[in-house]
Image 1 (cartoon, rainbow, N blue to C red):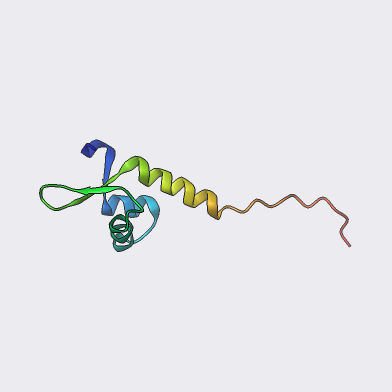
Image 2 (tube, one colour):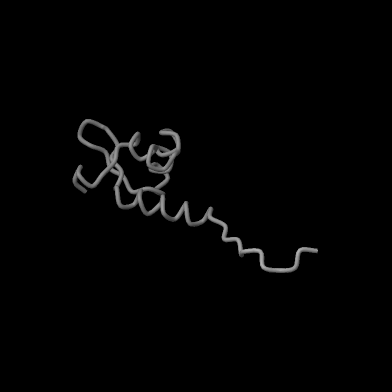
Length: 72
């Protein structure tokens, strides 16, 4: 993974609308692929973060059929 295809935990938290500590926990648990830089900073795979965001959004969307019956 190169740094151009990664997010810091802060950036990922902003993209996912989550706290930074939640993103860190998710990375520790393997829910988001990450690695540590030589300086000890965590970097997360940008594609995986975006995919998680798309999955999370699609799982929270509820489709409602238009009202087409008789109003009783």
